[in-house]
Image (cartoon, rainbow, N blue to C red):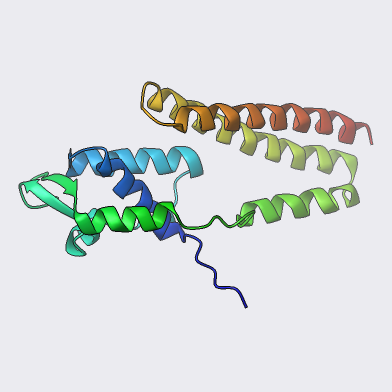
Length: 181
């Protein structure tokens, strides 16, 4: 049996938080806002993903105050040596391909879509189009937010946006074909 060392949603938020602050000290409120905006732009609002607390990272010694103490006084925080080690471990964790439940549900819809009447097929494809458009809008919003940042995030987002646009065109074509059924 193989050990699965891929990241959990909680660890993904930890990686986002530690990576954000690794670039330089930030005030508590700036760090929390940056992480929240990044996560929700990519995956939408999710309590599973946003339940992690910066206070917990501080308690675990992964971030430490430079000025102030915590959330109450909007402390200026930096990553600690232990946080740098945790960041490295999280960054080098393996990826789990196609682990997203929504991808499974989408695949099941496509597998069995032909069993529905054509009008219902078109309605279901419209729902998929709405979902795709929402995701594309979040990606475009995030792309604007990271313009000018160092690293490869902009390149990755450009690729994701191109894929999302292609998928949207494909879904619109599919809707037209299904409606003729």
